[in-house]
Length: 401
View 1 (cartoon, one colour):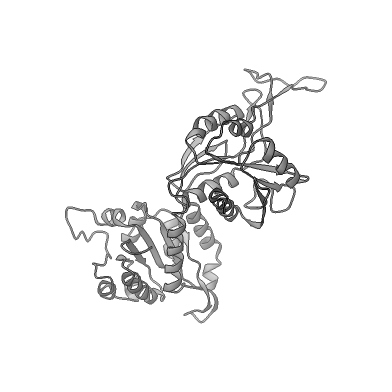
View 2 (spheres, rainbow, N blue to C red):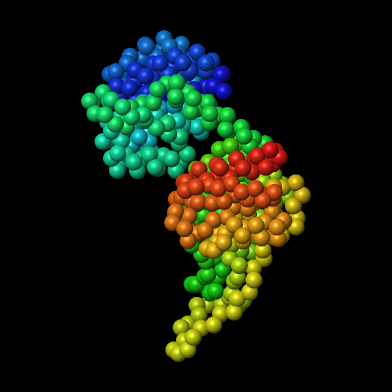
């Protein structure tokens, strides 16, 4: 998968820079075109001439060293890249990238590129566990950077623990695997709904639920990672998509979401309704803030909202339609009932009262059930991993395997 790929290898200042020499050589042997960008600290460990000899390309060390006056070097290389690898990535480099700094060739290039970026950290075990480093890595992950975790073992500083840069062969294996996965849903159009809805009562108050949108966003991101053309319809959430190829449509109410999903539905191949849509809304909406009564109780008459899944199930032709069922009792039984009643191809059910599977968290526990009533248990995992497993089950069922 790496043959004829344009790869930028960013090398920062750590003793593991010597491994970057082997990585350059192996990538070149696989048929990749490699251009190396070095920080000033990296040159203390390995000379640019070494990388130039191995890659057979000029090595970039200075933002202001414009080799071609017709081009701006860091923009030109950023546009040229199919893949960017930072190996080794020191704690300092992670901090600069996570804070959007652009004070050398590597950091300016990283701000300019739209290519996928793979980071192979290398540092002392205690540095790797420092809260600042952890937060920087979390921020970069939220932006869509891919991490190749360091191995554990004897470190150059004398400590034994996690922090040793992964071996070049393992780095190549991870990237090769990612490239293969990025083709799994190529050519497919995927529609995902996420988050809660808000049903307004007056200019101040509304009814809603505890959905954070994390599961739906994770599915949209995973589908884009697998190469699909993704449309995400989301209720009000405090989240951003990291993949710029995801088309995002923001809605507020259940009716807004119904209209958006109905409009997009005919053009999709896979539709996954992960949103927690309100079943009821206030029948009467006040134009002004409703004042508190001096005495007595308040009664609000509610009316049913449109059932989005039922409507889509009635309209579907070629689409593979997947629903979600967040339950507190007998989730599988209720899930199977919804699967049949709403003409779904599959449903994902979970017990939100179970620790690790509730709203707002970063993990989930779920059961995937297809039309043939085949059940797949998904144990406690991050929502990102749950999303990938769900999509793999969908791909399997679409192929009839």
